[in-house]
Length: 312
Image: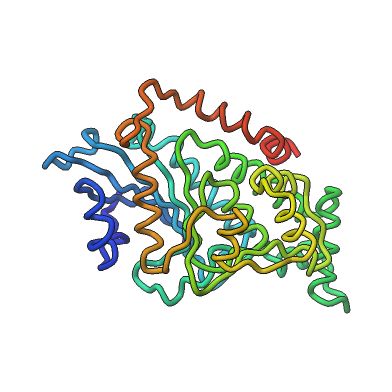
């Protein structure tokens, strides 16, 4: 593992470092625009990774040229990163951790326009051999319709995204936070909904279920996840049936997100909240924390969506 420079920016120095114990970071996974960075908190002067006060994981989505769309490449990268979370020695020996998922690029905030721009419609149309005279929306709708009936390669892509990514994140045995740095649409929204909490940037970017606008239907997993995570029926009806674009203020008022911050403060806020959720060293520690029981609790809370995502 190499030392990461992701958090050594001016915002992090002035915001996060004043809010947490001294720490250092390591990149545990980095490939094709997706990386997993472990920030190791420690109140001691040693840099011993086994002697720490918690680990904040950050899953960075930096496939900016593709707008972080969900396609087989992105899914494979996410699965690999999640596997590292399960198996890396630094992480497997501690329960005291949290996860942030974000598209923020600390080196260049200007390119952070997308958290996730939905399914890769271009890939879906090509995979479905549907490049006739129909327009992009109609072709994409046909691809999703076929996918829900297991009729084309898109179905395998969505099944893998649901069962190996969304179901996994939904039931991770620690706090998960989506730091939504820009547009959060369709499958990008479902990735955020799989997290326990959602913070969003102000001023730019919106949240949207785009299916009604594109003439698509929802897969069962996407529908059940939306119903489990959006408690207000009126919001669910509006979001799904009108394809409304929610600003951060509107999303907060609707209960879709839990907080809104300027982009320069978004990661710091998510980081502080992740630290507050560490089961062993937070101000409200969980004395007898059991990660297996914690995962099972999440499975029970979101039973319907978990089953739909995991088993179809």
